Length: 276
Ligand code: AMP
Ligand code: MN
Ligand code: MN
Ligand code: MN
Image (cartoon, rainbow, N blue to C red; front, side):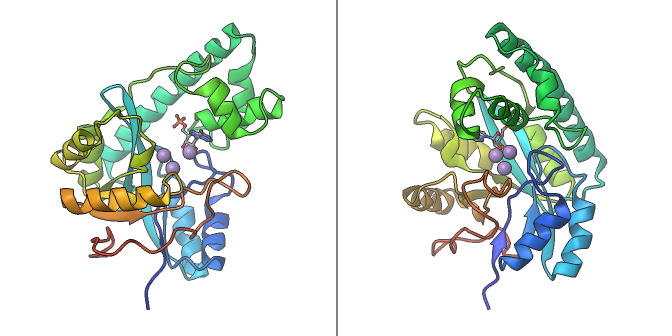
């Protein structure tokens, strides 16, 4: 029997809308056999998810999605199979989360200068874990106050490079992030590579990711078109990296895909779960 994997999703411990236990239950109902919870820069939802997974008959993988700066681009690196108690990883994630708070204050200032006062406090109303604030929380506030139609519209108008709520930020370096993941016994997966605006430098990015110790590419992601499934499957083969798959689910009504929605991996790839 082929197992059904979903190795990328978010709970209320970062910018998802469901608590870890609800997420795991939903995954079980939707036919996911193996689930990783990958909250942004955070591992504190993992214990709750793991105990819910026992009841739901879902095999659970401890994960996180780390924010990384590579040149002037923000990358996301999904960590799979980490030890959540690893000190190097926890300290690294804590530093990243602190950076998020500083960035959020500056985002509030940028939006105030553009005629939207109170956005930091407003975003805080949408935060579901005192430890983590993200652009998504600003997006929910801006939609709620009628500044935009939905979260996609709000990102386009306010929260991406060149817009008033965008603040350039230095996250962890690629080698720090991969180092912490490996120290914690996990695998490092380049999340949704099709989303990065690398201007023809995808090969450079992938070879640097691989040289830094990167283990896998997230080939299947709702951020990718079917043509990109094929493109990143080819990159995974060419660079000798494993392949991963995840829905990047954030919550009902707010996501491109639901839990377990990704198709089977294209042929000829080594799945990141090969030795699990
Ligand atoms: P941050 O890590 O705080 O910069 O926020 C990134 C998060 O914002 C992503 O994980 C998504 O959840 C969300 N996001 C980014 N771009 C978009 C978009 N265009 N539409 C909706 N959500 C987005
Ligand atoms: Mn997110
Ligand atoms: Mn991401
Ligand atoms: Mn994600």
